[in-house]
Length: 551
Image 1 (cartoon, rainbow, N blue to C red):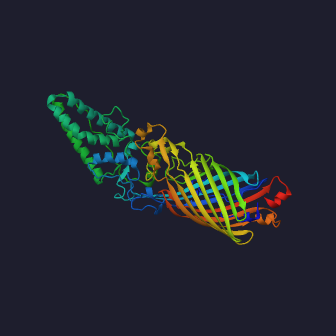
Image 2 (cartoon, rainbow, N blue to C red):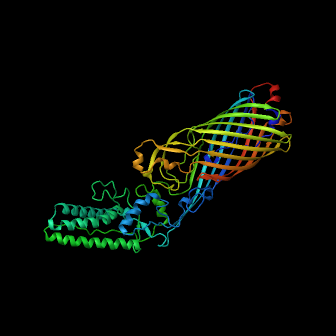
Image 3 (cartoon, rainbow, N blue to C red):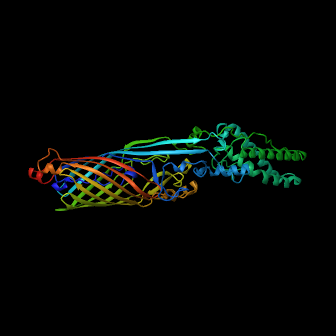
């Protein structure tokens, strides 16, 4: 390697870790003909905030906690949209048009960090051309602190639906509702003429309430034989108002009135010689507010809940996205140096799990193609400026995702679908002025800009659109990424000294830090990076004259 290449600028590497660590450039000098470069560039990234967009009460680009979507003074259908059907049924059952499910005050704090330990090998095929492979081992960890204050009834006036733990009792109630409404329907059509109008009026009056309670008691739209089939929601109501609250008392009062009306009908039909079915099974309301443990159990429940993770810690240690590259030195004259690199990134990493709502993967797990270039101009004996640019083309793939809006990350299992994912292409630009302290030490300061377009999602099976009742394009939301990072690093290099015969081994060592100062997109993490990079050079063929001229 020429002596002037001894000044290595800031060094960080595309370690194929999750997106927060992406867009670092490999700046270790490429090896010359017959030289092998072994590089170990560990990088640590950490973030607990993001540059938000669209969060109620906030403004675009403002820093906000990662768990803001699940943090609320009244956790309900706004944060968990799949509770909307239950909420609608309970509005009908209570007669309270403004009724809203309130699971209490919830707080979710997240602290994400990714540690990538890549190991790379590059071989110089000529003085200008080299090829390389980088294999990253990535450990991603998300620490979670989930707290729910459900101790006060005014904060969480709901409890776990007793029907979920006592299905037999709930089944008796549903059977009687079905039998009573079926009898009314039959009597309205073919019963005693004098009572048909009364049966029709009772059916119209009682059906909304009883079908809403039927649904809340565990009946579902899949009960095709039920009279309430068309009105039932697709899953049982996981929560009901507490007994003794306004909503609970309203249900009790309205159900009591319905039973009184039914008794009157039974008497009227008995006078005509018609026996109506019994309707006296109990409908149980919870007596204690939902607890934090029950909330987490609800998230795990595949029947009435989300069928996912309980917002516990997520930890992955797996292979990242392996990459292969070819680098060609296009200029190496006097004060000007330049190179171009073509890179392919393989889908070997672990994508974040659709079951875990706070997971961070170890890679994007899809094929990328990247072209980049770097040029350096020496402006004096102790100062130079490098400029680099890279453009990445991310190829489509297929994977299973829970289809839900960006502001509702907790989605139920029945919203899972196989989708076609087309991640947005990206552009990275950076400028690095470097000051040479002596023939081995240098200090560099970097300004980096990164921009990635929004992802595009479509269903692999078009029929999933009707099943999920959401367009796959809702996954596109807040997937665009823009950020600006600033950082600095010290580099110690023996390459110049080795070429001059004053060092026994050629290597470079860089220690640096970067911080994300600005971001847009809605999910762009406010990442801080620490990296240490060691690159060592070994000649495997070539003459002694080449040793002095080129590593």
